[in-house]
Length: 321
Image (cartoon, rainbow, N blue to C red; front, side, top):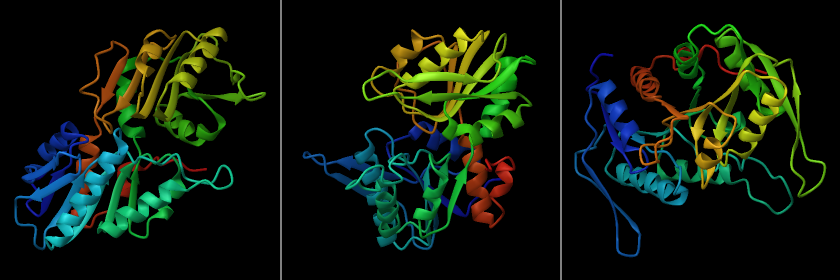
């Protein structure tokens, strides 16, 4: 990629390793800034370079601690707006609160919409994100929103990891993720299966039925988020019971909260591959956890936005119904 002198990159504290990868790919240093805490944990920001009229990209996932990282994003955005930045784009590799995208019961919030309003009101004029949990969240924003897909990143990873294995089968861990899994299966020329997950009554363990012949196959569970990993591990167990040779998982956002990695290490899963949309560098190492970078893809998207080129060309195989 050619050096791009027409942009400014700034990072919060949520994912500095990914910000550095993007910075290196674009041949642009990260803007000097201080993002610190007062004694009472209030967030304080100082931009230490001239931002007037600049095309600025803020790189900040709203992952754990979600509220702190979201506030950092909002305060950095406000600081840039008050510094007369020309255009402010929020690059949010992992968009937190995305699972609260509808009202599942009376008197509950649609928090994804609230967060989108906050980002817009703070001063962002564009959003760039990866694998939103629900596509309709793009419509929650009243500003241009580009939702990239990690399918090409995982497709390249699969070629290396499986090295010509002709028994591959992509498995959606639930019916809701079938479109996403179908897109990935098409990209690696693999067959498709799905797990029908049912709960007979509250408090009873999910009943899982594998729809598709997985006997003797190398299965790849494909999803957008792995959080507690409970469903993923149960799905791997169900696939092995049906004769699967090996079970792997590929999930864009590795939330991996609480004892998720211990659960994975003790499970039937051989590997779990995630992207670096959430920083994994502080996590205890595990032979099963593989991290694929989305830095080059985000850098390419940032360059396309700056040049007013098409961003959609980066994901020809976007999920479709």
